[in-house]
Length: 216
Image (tube, rainbow, N blue to C red; front, side):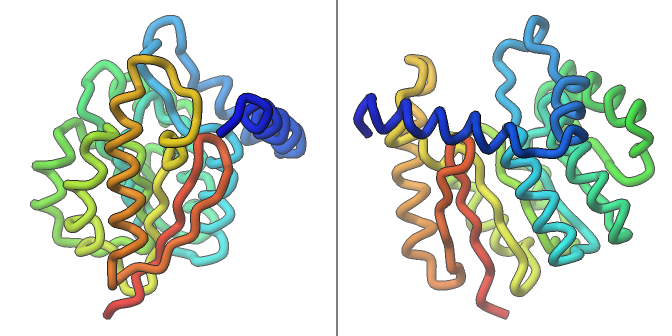
């Protein structure tokens, strides 16, 4: 991606965020603790709004999130699930992040909708027996590819797997995140070739892949 194209994409993202409802932006502001947790990179407001709309449209009873961070996306998802009578299970490996997320979720009045699990998702996923109508993958990028088979197994037929940051391979990312570019190149190829999935990639935020499970 050229520098001009990258700048144009950034301008597009700023414009799109300006069209979002105030509620989705205020959730982000309340849950953001950049000074304390600089390593956290939760989904952006446009992605959060996209996931919320998909939940309202597909009305899943159970949603799974990998990577809670400070709870921004969990709260956006939880608010949508409250309208459709669903619940969210979100997994975070960092105890400090999970603690902040729980407090943010409590302040949002969604503690009855959202369950935060502090664990390594690679281990916890194998112990889950439920199927999920929608799964948001926003965990450690190096884990995306190895988690894919178990996430597909947990995904209900015709359910949605939403993956954040899939355009890292063509974006100008910070030096510390460049190793993820190759990992996400492999992951995108796996989505493209998987016989049980149909996938579309969208230039929203750092890139979002929306996959639906076509096998029963």
